[in-house]
Image (cartoon, rainbow, N blue to C red; front, side):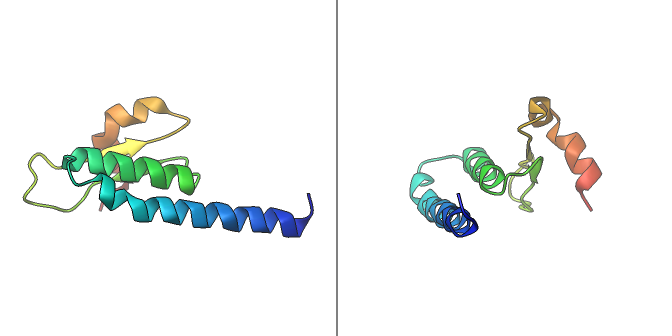
Length: 90
C-alpha cells in the first residue's frame, strides 16, 4: 500500500472515531455516571491507541469519587485505579 493510501485510511479511521464520539451522548440518557465514564474512557483508549488511560472527573457532588483506569496490556490496572490516580494525580 502506498503512503497516500495509508494516510487516507488513517484519516478515515479518525473521522469514524470522531463520529462515534459524537454519537455517545445519545447512549448516555439512561446510564449512570460510572457507565458513562467507562464507555468514554474505553473509546478514547482504543481511538488513541493508549497504553494506559485514567479518568477521575472533578465533581464534588459525586461521593465516592468516580475513578477508572484502563490498560490493554495490563488488565489488572482497572482494579487499581486509585493507585494509578495517586501516581498521576496532582
